[in-house]
Image (cartoon, rainbow, N blue to C red; front, top):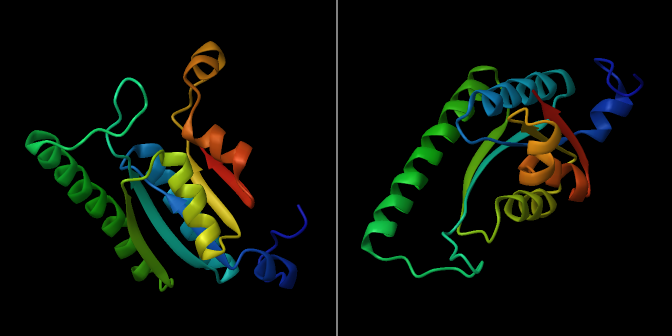
Length: 159
């Protein structure tokens, strides 16, 4: 696989900024580990994000956050911050240049990740997958599939 050899000038020039999307799941933890390994080998910068979408009505419109939803949303943001901080701390222990950010109130998780990737000039997006297959994946779709289909940069999906 040309371009992925350790020490390759082509590889280090190609993947300078890697974005990993996490959600606290085991698959996203595996994706974060893979992203850190790539960053170590390529000397790339790591960006860690988690998107917390605003609740939507059944018609797809954003809903006003009442007190209960505000508390739930605040708890979701705190959980996302913890997920991100775990990855950031692990990356820092490895000596990586790393930043983390909660993407709050995006219209969709996919849109938030893709917009952020473009905004930071990501060369590679790393995401985990829940491993949905066949008919379930066809009906439900997935964040990783949508990112693969719509990203303007390379995408690595980790199982």
